[in-house]
Image 1 (tube, rainbow, N blue to C red):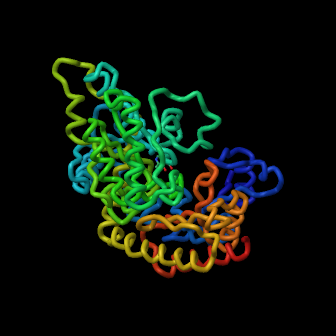
Image 2 (cartoon, rainbow, N blue to C red):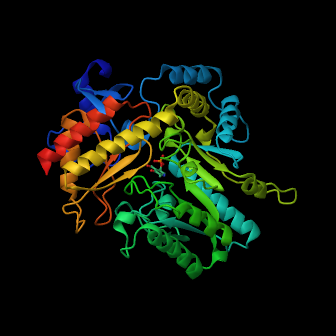
Image 3 (spheres, protein in one colour):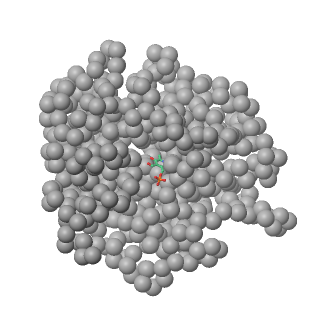
Length: 457
Ligand code: PLP
């Protein structure tokens, strides 16, 4: 079928056969057309009906960090695939080695890159490393993995076991044992009403209480997002990360930081953890690594972790894990160009300065609309939490949030909203535009939000 010249045919093929991620399909049965995006350039995308949109969420799921239409990446991937498309298992490839070197240069204190395809998979690798170390050195006892309420680490059953968003998890149990949660660190919704230094201290004490309750000798790692993304754009309180690092040292717990969203410049530094001066043992990354031009994720570790998998005496003591497509060269070939672009175009700096502009715009909206209760984020990663009332902080309901997102969509502006989850948390508008965003782009985006809030609330 020559479907490409037949937009209606494509819409009908999609309606009949594509099972979309995260979507309630029922409206498609009632005449609502599936949304099909056909082209992109910079921050803009065009749908199959020819409508232009400005995309403030980098491909819907905060991925296209360098923006759409980068011929340079496409060409590098094409050239690499023509020459040597894939060799997996125990062999290496030229782009794999090259990109590993480039990446490690940006991550002082880390040494080894393990390739996979998705954020979930990279996190699974991190969990498996912790479990294997536990078996090898601790008789299998130091195997628990701590995660935090509101954080998300992926979609597999085991990643959901480490997932702190109840609604995402509700229908997929039973879960993998050995994952234990610690409380969230959203000061705006402080559980005991404390704030400032007292809130930081309470948040850290809550983690330490869990460690003491479970027993430090049973805990292998603590896995955290640097800034919680889909769970509400939660920037930890000042001093939190220093305290987390100290707890991990004190109790001999590996610190695993999930940079799937914050990595590759999203917050204004190469990695989110670098905003907080913390030194992780394991770092996972995916979305921005190749900005969506190819599927690639990485689990990066220190040599101290890596060396535990080398052994002359135990032939099976190596990391007995594989990822078939972790051997596809398209990923690192795209990632190399992606990193060059971020560097050459000064996109870390742009993320920082434009991030400040975005937050200033959101604060101005907060002055104007009493429904914005809190503005959070770092770099080109920001959230505006919506409340019915600033004193009670009663959340704006899910339908209203959807109406605001829908109104922006009608205006040709794609914005996000955080995952609908615990009561009180389903209400944060989310912005994560490509790191090339200009002041004009950001003004355009926040003007649309201004109009949408005025119309809907
Ligand atoms: N970790 C975080 C922080 C995420 O936000 C996501 C996805 O949104 C993942 C992991 C999972 O990544 P993937 O969907 O590539 O498996």
